[in-house]
Amino acid sequence: MTIAYWCVLAAAIIPYIWVIIAKASKPGFNNNKPRIFLNELKGWGQRANWAQANSFEAFPAFAAAVIIGSVVSNVEQNTLDALALLFVICRLLHGIFYITDKATLRSIVWFIGISSWVSIFVLSA
Image 1 (cartoon, rainbow, N blue to C red):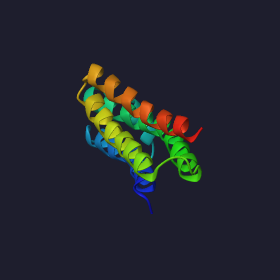
Image 2: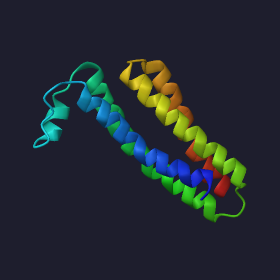
Image 3: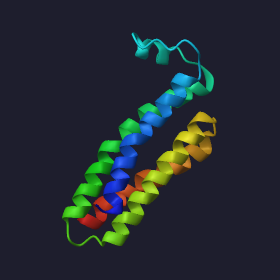
């Protein structure tokens, strides 16, 4: 399996890291009503939940880009792997900056992450 494919797996797991952090932010997690519990969070727990949602939103386009980039022969594997790694690193930093309330840094790494999968699509054209 290529590095880019491993990055798809990593990107699929990242949202679960943030939701575990969100659930740990407040005692009394209720597994019978997890969405209500998460919606009532405040502060860094709430931001961790938002990071989870944003990570799920970012995943489909990235996964599609990697698959398309892998199928199209004019994208070098090293380039695809590097852009996929860049996306995963940006998603991890995005979540950290989201939880720690560093909005400007969060926006910068969000933009770089989006640019990585857009680049894969452009190179695949």
